[in-house]
Amino acid sequence: MDGSPDLSRACSSDSSLKSLFWIFFKIACTSFGGFMAMIAVVQNVVVERRKLLSSADMADGISLASILPGPVAVNLVAYVGYRLRGAAGATVSAVAIVLPSLVLILLLSVAYFRYGQVPAVSRLFLGFIPAMTAIILAAAWNMARKSVASVREGVLVVAAAVVLLAVGGAWSTLGIVLGAGVLGSWWFRERGGPADPPAAPAATPSPKPDTTRLQAVLPLVSSAAPLFSVDPGLLAKIFFTFAGMSLMLFGGAYVFIPLIQEVVVEGHGWVSQQEFIDAVAMGQVTPGPILVSAAFVGLKIAGLAGALAATLGIYLPSALVMIASSRLLEHIKRSAAIRAALRGVRPAVVGMIFAAGVVIGKTAAPVWVSVVIFAAALVALLRFRIEAVWIIPAAGGFGWWFY
Image 1 (cartoon, helix red, strand yellow):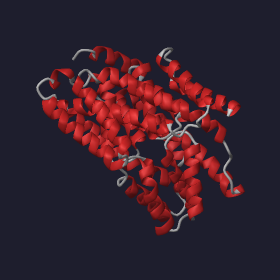
Image 2 (spheres, rainbow, N blue to C red; image 1 turned 30 degrees about the horizontal axis):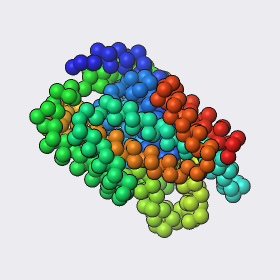
Image 3 (cartoon, rainbow, N blue to C red; image 1 turned 30 degrees about the vertical axis):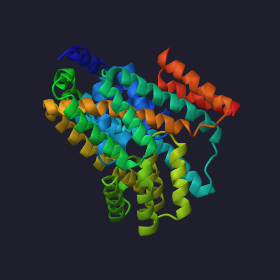
Image 4 (tube, helix red, strand yellow; image 1 turned 120 degrees about the horizontal axis):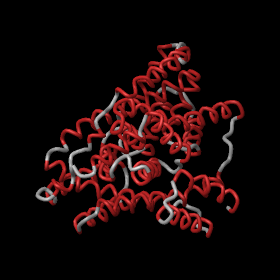
């Protein structure tokens, strides 16, 4: 139980619903580069900067999000919110991580439908890529320092990175997590128990302090009700279509793009092939989760209410599955075999994060500016411990000026 009092104090003072909202809202505003980049920023802020969760807890959340359906980064954020503030924390955190990208995609979509083009921001993104590479590798390094304590764990890190780089794909991710869990239960069964104490008391949901805040939100929810008054049948169809696809998504948003294309373009004919490609492009040029592109489809079909229905459909069902699984995880972690399996999975997660950093780094422009941005971001993170949310805008501005 070592460390529980410290975590409890941190959670009571630094993880109110208001604090959680602003933490993840700021992360969402600066998270470019895909779900692994967002995971790296979340790890940097929640574990390294604010110390709201331990590195082991974060690794468990990443493992769980990797093997469950749905958007990995949003599910991880829901897990963090649930661990800190129960169901209300999961709700507030998930809304905060999606809200900035949702607003931006709606603005871009309106401009697209009116003018037929997306604003060019390519030079900004040339600066984002090497900075995000540094953030991902720094996150992997910080997790490795706490998760790798033996040669066997080091082997799992290297093996996971090699498999993901050599094979790739959703099935590789799932296979790495499951394989590392099996090896961990064998390698660490005898000595794995003491290394992973039971979850801190702070992880228990604490809904009572948050009821007044929830009551304050109710008038806002009721005032938004007219948005859902347009053709309820169509809105329900949009919601359940995207909800069904959400529960079929394994391995990240890029694995999901062919499925959503098949359904919304070929199946329902809601958007054209070109409109779908442009929707994905807009999801990539906005910060936050790329699957917010679903709002583009919903907006075209049924206006703002359709955009909200599509967004809820793509994120809500898998987030609920994640929360239910998180609750179950806290019970089964008492088993020595499960703790040993998780001890094997954590270094594998580190290896997957390293591999993601390499993959993203390969897409950076092969010029000296990329090297300078990468090196400066890495030093800022590891030496001066500057928050990742400040590094991204600086890198974008540097890229805008020098590329």
